[in-house]
Amino acid sequence: MSSVMFETQRAALADVVAIPVTPFAADGSVDREAHRTLLRRLLDSGIGTLTPNGNTGEFYALTPEERRLVTETTVEEAGDRAVVLAGVGHDLPSAIAAARHARDAGARMVMVHQPVHPYVSAAGWVDYHRAVADAVPELGVVPYLRDARLPGGRLAELAGHCPNVIGVKYAVPDAARFAGFARDAGLDRFVWVAGLAEPYAPSYFSAGATGFTSGLVNVAPAVSLTMLEALRSGDHPAAMRVWERIRRFEELRAAHGSANNVTVVKEALAALGLCRRDVRPPSRTLPEDERAEVAAIAAAWTTGRPT
Image (cartoon, helix red, strand yellow):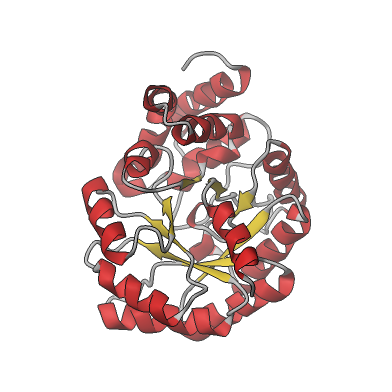
Protein backbone atom coordinates (compact mmCIF):
# COMPACT_ATOMS: atom_id res chain seq x y z
CA MET A 1 0.00 0.00 0.00
CA SER A 2 1.53 3.31 -1.04
CA SER A 3 1.76 6.30 1.26
CA VAL A 4 -0.42 8.20 -1.21
CA MET A 5 -3.21 5.67 -0.74
CA PHE A 6 -2.88 5.85 3.03
CA GLU A 7 -3.04 9.62 2.78
CA THR A 8 -6.36 9.27 0.95
CA GLN A 9 -7.62 7.14 3.81
CA ARG A 10 -6.29 9.56 6.41
CA ALA A 11 -8.11 12.41 4.68
CA ALA A 12 -11.34 10.41 4.79
CA LEU A 13 -11.06 10.19 8.59
CA ALA A 14 -10.58 13.94 8.96
CA ASP A 15 -14.22 14.47 8.12
CA VAL A 16 -17.75 13.63 9.24
CA VAL A 17 -17.48 9.86 9.67
CA ALA A 18 -21.07 8.73 9.22
CA ILE A 19 -22.34 5.66 11.08
CA PRO A 20 -25.39 4.58 9.06
CA VAL A 21 -28.30 2.84 10.73
CA THR A 22 -29.35 -0.64 9.65
CA PRO A 23 -33.09 -0.45 8.90
CA PHE A 24 -35.28 -3.49 9.48
CA ALA A 25 -38.32 -4.68 7.56
CA ALA A 26 -41.62 -5.69 9.12
CA ASP A 27 -40.46 -9.32 9.26
CA GLY A 28 -37.35 -8.32 11.23
CA SER A 29 -34.85 -8.82 8.40
CA VAL A 30 -32.55 -6.11 7.07
CA ASP A 31 -34.59 -3.81 4.84
CA ARG A 32 -32.30 -3.74 1.84
CA GLU A 33 -34.25 -1.15 -0.13
CA ALA A 34 -34.49 1.27 2.79
CA HIS A 35 -30.81 0.69 3.55
CA ARG A 36 -29.80 1.70 0.04
CA THR A 37 -32.10 4.71 0.13
CA LEU A 38 -30.57 5.94 3.37
CA LEU A 39 -27.03 5.43 2.08
CA ARG A 40 -27.83 7.36 -1.11
CA ARG A 41 -29.30 10.17 0.97
CA LEU A 42 -26.02 10.46 2.88
CA LEU A 43 -23.95 10.35 -0.30
CA ASP A 44 -26.15 12.89 -2.08
CA SER A 45 -25.72 15.20 0.90
CA GLY A 46 -21.94 15.19 0.48
CA ILE A 47 -20.93 12.64 3.11
CA GLY A 48 -17.64 11.06 2.06
CA THR A 49 -16.92 8.49 4.78
CA LEU A 50 -19.28 5.66 5.74
CA THR A 51 -18.93 3.13 8.57
CA PRO A 52 -21.10 0.07 8.03
CA ASN A 53 -21.36 -2.10 11.14
CA GLY A 54 -20.82 0.69 13.61
CA ASN A 55 -22.67 0.83 16.90
CA THR A 56 -25.39 3.08 15.43
CA GLY A 57 -25.76 0.33 12.83
CA GLU A 58 -26.51 -2.16 15.65
CA PHE A 59 -23.31 -4.11 15.02
CA TYR A 60 -23.74 -6.37 18.02
CA ALA A 61 -27.35 -7.21 17.15
CA LEU A 62 -26.61 -8.35 13.58
CA THR A 63 -25.78 -11.87 12.49
CA PRO A 64 -22.48 -12.54 10.70
CA GLU A 65 -24.40 -12.88 7.42
CA GLU A 66 -26.15 -9.56 7.99
CA ARG A 67 -22.89 -7.82 8.81
CA ARG A 68 -21.43 -9.04 5.52
CA LEU A 69 -24.55 -7.89 3.68
CA VAL A 70 -24.35 -4.42 5.26
CA THR A 71 -20.68 -4.10 4.28
CA GLU A 72 -21.27 -5.23 0.71
CA THR A 73 -24.28 -2.96 0.24
CA THR A 74 -22.42 0.04 1.59
CA VAL A 75 -19.44 -0.54 -0.68
CA GLU A 76 -21.72 -0.94 -3.69
CA GLU A 77 -23.59 2.28 -2.99
CA ALA A 78 -20.47 4.23 -2.09
CA GLY A 79 -18.68 3.41 -5.34
CA ASP A 80 -16.13 6.15 -5.89
CA ARG A 81 -18.20 8.71 -3.98
CA ALA A 82 -17.12 7.74 -0.47
CA VAL A 83 -14.53 5.78 1.47
CA VAL A 84 -15.86 2.81 3.43
CA LEU A 85 -14.57 2.16 6.95
CA ALA A 86 -16.08 -1.21 7.92
CA GLY A 87 -16.62 -2.14 11.55
CA VAL A 88 -15.15 -5.47 12.70
CA GLY A 89 -14.87 -7.14 16.08
CA HIS A 90 -15.98 -9.98 18.37
CA ASP A 91 -13.54 -12.88 18.82
CA LEU A 92 -10.23 -12.50 17.02
CA PRO A 93 -10.84 -15.06 14.23
CA SER A 94 -14.20 -13.41 13.50
CA ALA A 95 -12.62 -9.95 13.45
CA ILE A 96 -9.90 -11.10 11.05
CA ALA A 97 -12.41 -12.85 8.79
CA ALA A 98 -14.61 -9.74 8.74
CA ALA A 99 -11.61 -7.52 7.93
CA ARG A 100 -10.62 -9.75 5.03
CA HIS A 101 -14.21 -9.81 3.80
CA ALA A 102 -14.33 -6.02 3.96
CA ARG A 103 -11.09 -5.82 1.98
CA ASP A 104 -12.36 -8.24 -0.66
CA ALA A 105 -15.67 -6.36 -0.90
CA GLY A 106 -13.82 -3.12 -1.63
CA ALA A 107 -13.65 -1.29 1.71
CA ARG A 108 -10.57 0.87 2.21
CA MET A 109 -10.40 0.77 6.01
CA VAL A 110 -11.63 -1.18 9.01
CA MET A 111 -12.64 0.13 12.41
CA VAL A 112 -11.84 -2.37 15.15
CA HIS A 113 -14.57 -2.29 17.78
CA GLN A 114 -13.56 -2.07 21.40
CA PRO A 115 -12.98 -5.60 22.76
CA VAL A 116 -15.92 -6.60 24.97
CA HIS A 117 -14.10 -9.41 26.74
CA PRO A 118 -14.36 -8.84 30.52
CA TYR A 119 -10.62 -9.33 30.99
CA VAL A 120 -8.70 -6.95 28.75
CA SER A 121 -5.02 -6.31 29.45
CA ALA A 122 -3.16 -3.43 27.81
CA ALA A 123 -0.68 -5.85 26.23
CA GLY A 124 -3.53 -8.08 25.08
CA TRP A 125 -5.22 -5.05 23.50
CA VAL A 126 -2.07 -4.54 21.43
CA ASP A 127 -1.99 -8.23 20.47
CA TYR A 128 -5.63 -8.18 19.36
CA HIS A 129 -5.29 -5.11 17.16
CA ARG A 130 -1.92 -6.18 15.78
CA ALA A 131 -3.41 -9.49 14.61
CA VAL A 132 -6.20 -7.69 12.76
CA ALA A 133 -3.87 -5.10 11.23
CA ASP A 134 -1.35 -7.74 10.13
CA ALA A 135 -4.13 -9.71 8.42
CA VAL A 136 -5.07 -6.79 6.15
CA PRO A 137 -1.91 -4.75 5.49
CA GLU A 138 -3.61 -3.18 2.46
CA LEU A 139 -6.25 -1.50 4.61
CA GLY A 140 -6.12 1.44 6.96
CA VAL A 141 -6.91 0.26 10.48
CA VAL A 142 -8.69 2.43 13.06
CA PRO A 143 -8.95 1.24 16.67
CA TYR A 144 -12.15 2.28 18.43
CA LEU A 145 -10.98 3.34 21.88
CA ARG A 146 -13.41 3.42 24.80
CA ASP A 147 -11.12 2.30 27.62
CA ALA A 148 -9.80 5.19 29.69
CA ARG A 149 -7.24 2.89 31.31
CA LEU A 150 -5.25 2.22 28.13
CA PRO A 151 -2.06 4.34 28.11
CA GLY A 152 -1.06 6.22 25.00
CA GLY A 153 2.22 4.36 24.90
CA ARG A 154 0.40 1.14 24.04
CA LEU A 155 -1.08 2.72 20.92
CA ALA A 156 2.39 3.96 19.97
CA GLU A 157 3.63 0.39 20.44
CA LEU A 158 0.92 -0.94 18.12
CA ALA A 159 1.73 1.66 15.48
CA GLY A 160 5.41 0.73 15.67
CA HIS A 161 4.48 -2.76 14.51
CA CYS A 162 1.68 -1.82 12.09
CA PRO A 163 2.10 1.13 9.72
CA ASN A 164 -1.48 0.64 8.52
CA VAL A 165 -2.87 1.72 11.90
CA ILE A 166 -3.53 5.24 10.71
CA GLY A 167 -6.29 6.68 12.86
CA VAL A 168 -8.07 6.40 16.17
CA LYS A 169 -11.75 6.72 17.01
CA TYR A 170 -11.42 8.06 20.54
CA ALA A 171 -14.59 7.66 22.59
CA VAL A 172 -13.62 8.29 26.19
CA PRO A 173 -15.79 11.16 27.46
CA ASP A 174 -12.94 13.26 28.84
CA ALA A 175 -11.37 15.96 26.68
CA ALA A 176 -8.39 16.45 28.98
CA ARG A 177 -7.67 12.73 28.97
CA PHE A 178 -7.92 12.72 25.18
CA ALA A 179 -5.42 15.58 24.90
CA GLY A 180 -2.89 13.72 27.02
CA PHE A 181 -3.48 10.35 25.39
CA ALA A 182 -3.06 11.75 21.88
CA ARG A 183 0.22 13.37 22.78
CA ASP A 184 1.51 10.28 24.56
CA ALA A 185 0.61 8.12 21.54
CA GLY A 186 1.83 10.56 18.89
CA LEU A 187 -0.39 13.46 17.94
CA ASP A 188 0.81 13.66 14.34
CA ARG A 189 1.16 9.90 13.81
CA PHE A 190 -2.60 9.31 13.72
CA VAL A 191 -5.76 10.95 12.50
CA TRP A 192 -7.79 11.59 15.65
CA VAL A 193 -11.54 11.13 15.28
CA ALA A 194 -13.83 12.37 18.04
CA GLY A 195 -15.73 9.14 18.59
CA LEU A 196 -18.50 10.61 20.73
CA ALA A 197 -19.92 12.61 17.83
CA GLU A 198 -21.09 16.22 17.67
CA PRO A 199 -21.50 16.86 21.43
CA TYR A 200 -17.77 16.29 22.00
CA ALA A 201 -16.44 17.48 18.64
CA PRO A 202 -15.72 21.12 19.59
CA SER A 203 -13.71 20.23 22.71
CA TYR A 204 -11.89 17.35 21.02
CA PHE A 205 -11.00 19.46 17.97
CA SER A 206 -9.42 22.01 20.31
CA ALA A 207 -7.16 19.20 21.56
CA GLY A 208 -6.18 17.77 18.17
CA ALA A 209 -9.06 15.86 16.58
CA THR A 210 -9.72 16.58 12.91
CA GLY A 211 -12.81 14.41 12.33
CA PHE A 212 -15.84 13.22 14.25
CA THR A 213 -18.25 10.34 14.02
CA SER A 214 -21.98 10.92 13.71
CA GLY A 215 -25.23 9.03 14.02
CA LEU A 216 -27.22 12.23 13.86
CA VAL A 217 -26.00 12.61 10.27
CA ASN A 218 -28.49 9.92 9.26
CA VAL A 219 -31.25 12.40 10.06
CA ALA A 220 -29.76 15.76 9.11
CA PRO A 221 -26.51 15.58 7.13
CA ALA A 222 -26.42 19.34 6.62
CA VAL A 223 -26.30 19.94 10.38
CA SER A 224 -23.25 17.71 10.83
CA LEU A 225 -21.49 19.22 7.82
CA THR A 226 -22.15 22.74 9.12
CA MET A 227 -20.43 21.85 12.38
CA LEU A 228 -17.47 20.38 10.51
CA GLU A 229 -17.12 23.51 8.40
CA ALA A 230 -17.11 25.69 11.52
CA LEU A 231 -14.53 23.52 13.26
CA ARG A 232 -12.27 23.41 10.23
CA SER A 233 -12.35 27.18 9.92
CA GLY A 234 -11.65 27.66 13.62
CA ASP A 235 -15.00 29.38 14.18
CA HIS A 236 -15.74 28.04 17.66
CA PRO A 237 -18.83 30.23 18.25
CA ALA A 238 -20.38 28.91 15.03
CA ALA A 239 -19.61 25.33 16.03
CA MET A 240 -21.24 25.92 19.39
CA ARG A 241 -24.34 27.32 17.73
CA VAL A 242 -24.69 23.97 15.98
CA TRP A 243 -23.97 22.28 19.31
CA GLU A 244 -26.92 24.12 20.80
CA ARG A 245 -29.17 22.97 17.96
CA ILE A 246 -28.29 19.31 18.45
CA ARG A 247 -28.01 19.33 22.23
CA ARG A 248 -31.48 18.03 23.11
CA PHE A 249 -31.42 15.29 20.47
CA GLU A 250 -28.09 14.04 21.77
CA GLU A 251 -29.26 14.28 25.38
CA LEU A 252 -32.15 11.98 24.49
CA ARG A 253 -29.73 9.53 22.90
CA ALA A 254 -27.42 9.61 25.91
CA ALA A 255 -30.14 9.15 28.53
CA HIS A 256 -30.18 6.03 30.71
CA GLY A 257 -26.60 5.10 29.85
CA SER A 258 -27.15 5.63 26.10
CA ALA A 259 -29.98 3.07 26.11
CA ASN A 260 -31.73 4.99 23.33
CA ASN A 261 -28.67 5.87 21.26
CA VAL A 262 -29.91 4.10 18.13
CA THR A 263 -33.58 4.25 19.07
CA VAL A 264 -33.77 8.05 18.90
CA VAL A 265 -32.05 8.15 15.50
CA LYS A 266 -34.42 5.57 14.06
CA GLU A 267 -37.41 7.33 15.61
CA ALA A 268 -36.39 10.54 13.84
CA LEU A 269 -35.98 8.69 10.54
CA ALA A 270 -39.38 7.05 11.02
CA ALA A 271 -40.93 10.47 11.64
CA LEU A 272 -39.46 11.61 8.32
CA GLY A 273 -40.84 8.51 6.57
CA LEU A 274 -37.40 7.14 5.73
CA CYS A 275 -37.44 3.78 7.55
CA ARG A 276 -39.23 1.86 10.26
CA ARG A 277 -38.47 2.67 13.90
CA ASP A 278 -37.68 -0.97 14.73
CA VAL A 279 -34.55 -1.78 16.72
CA ARG A 280 -33.35 -5.10 18.06
CA PRO A 281 -32.91 -6.16 21.69
CA PRO A 282 -31.25 -5.12 23.88
CA SER A 283 -32.38 -1.77 22.39
CA ARG A 284 -36.08 -0.94 22.40
CA THR A 285 -38.35 1.52 20.60
CA LEU A 286 -39.35 4.74 22.35
CA PRO A 287 -42.63 4.86 24.28
CA GLU A 288 -45.44 6.56 22.40
CA ASP A 289 -45.37 9.63 24.64
CA GLU A 290 -41.70 10.35 23.89
CA ARG A 291 -41.89 10.13 20.12
CA ALA A 292 -43.36 13.56 19.47
CA GLU A 293 -40.32 15.44 20.78
CA VAL A 294 -37.95 13.52 18.52
CA ALA A 295 -40.24 14.06 15.53
CA ALA A 296 -40.37 17.81 16.22
CA ILE A 297 -36.58 18.08 16.34
CA ALA A 298 -36.18 16.14 13.09
CA ALA A 299 -38.82 18.25 11.37
CA ALA A 300 -37.14 21.49 12.48
CA TRP A 301 -33.77 20.36 11.16
CA THR A 302 -35.12 19.31 7.77
CA THR A 303 -37.21 22.46 7.30
CA GLY A 304 -34.57 24.84 8.62
CA ARG A 305 -36.71 26.10 11.51
CA PRO A 306 -34.88 26.93 14.74
CA THR A 307 -34.80 24.21 17.38
